[in-house]
Length: 206
Ligand SMILES: C[S@@+](CC[C@H](N)C(=O)[O-])C[C@H]1O[C@@H](n2cnc3c(N)ncnc32)[C@H](O)[C@@H]1O
Image 1 (cartoon, helix red, strand yellow):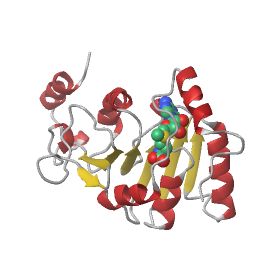
Image 2 (cartoon, rainbow, N blue to C red; image 1 turned 90 degrees about the vertical axis):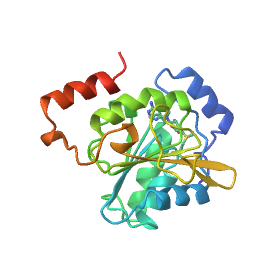
Image 3 (tube, helix red, strand yellow; image 1 turned 180 degrees about the vertical axis):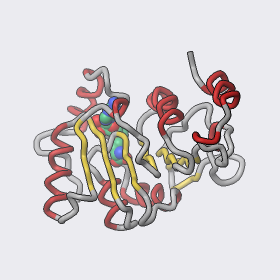
């Protein structure tokens, strides 16, 4: 159902990853049942705008819109062929207004429209992304990461472990801004100057 683009195998994608300084993860697709579990854990529904950072073949985007009824899904990937194929498939399904694939570096994306952000990167990739998530994600956004935690954040998973176990996979759910110690009542517009300065020194890495 989701074949690799013609003529490109997993080994080639790994080479692409190593050769591209912007890349923080190789292409390894999440199994479809893990994709569904991630979207279920995030509670994706008709009000949601789902961003998949490193969208690969677009399986998260199509599942979010077709099976979970998400309003919109946006994916970023460095691989042009993936993005071209996603656009073609979305158009063939009449979903071009709801599924968007951007061929570019997600570190340059504006994440503020997202209500759910999905990740399947690496622990170091997540650490690089963390300051951007803290800067741009709006309160109430859920961040779901397959297998790799966001170090320094607190997941709201089951039991003491903090993550959801699904078969041999781990799924980390983070709620913005509680994951990094702020109350969801604290909205940008209502934060005092003192609060903003305090957050700057508590949460930013220099
Ligand atoms: C492990 S795959 C995940 C694919 C998909 N999200 C899934 O769960 O099946 C990671 C993807 O991230 C992409 N990627 C890595 N760094 C990126 C970056 N800085 N900007 C955009 N895409 C990136 C890679 O090209 C690869 O397709």
